Image (tube, rainbow, N blue to C red; front, side, top):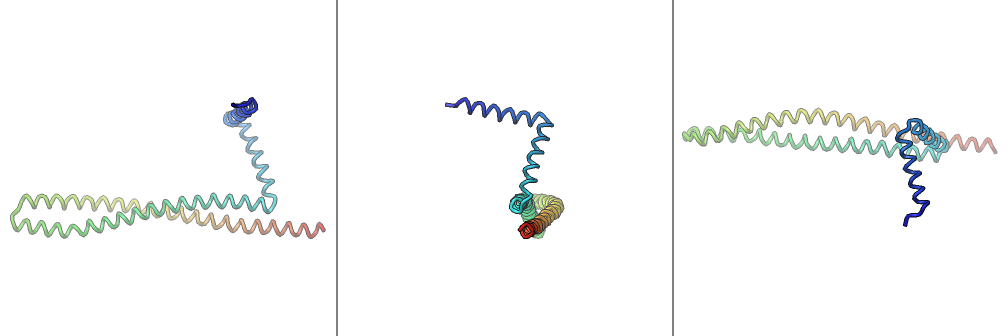
Length: 178
């Protein structure tokens, strides 16, 4: 059974959530409290280490997502390029079949092969259009992936520098305090 304290605790939590959702001042106050906690946490080398690790994790997640998008687009592009080559390789064979059927005076067979050739040419144009779009998308995804990679390198560089500086400053303070 649910006790009275659990009910009161639930009502208080729901009340706080409603206040934060509806009240801009309460939301601002909550953010200020969190920022105060984070600022206090970041004042020690261990706290800064934890914050940088969290930031690295976020940037790594962004990089993974950008990399996944890039790989997906690059895979679709490669598949479409291979399909285009296969379609282009089929055209000479169909044209030879058309010539053979024309020599045999097989109009019905010739019409079927001519329609097949027309369909393949249409597919080739569609694939060329898709390849153009995918190439642009791949280039944009590559830029996004590179930007995320650069951000990650910057965060790691800053992480090492700031934490090392904080540790050195703490050690120097301990030396001078003694």
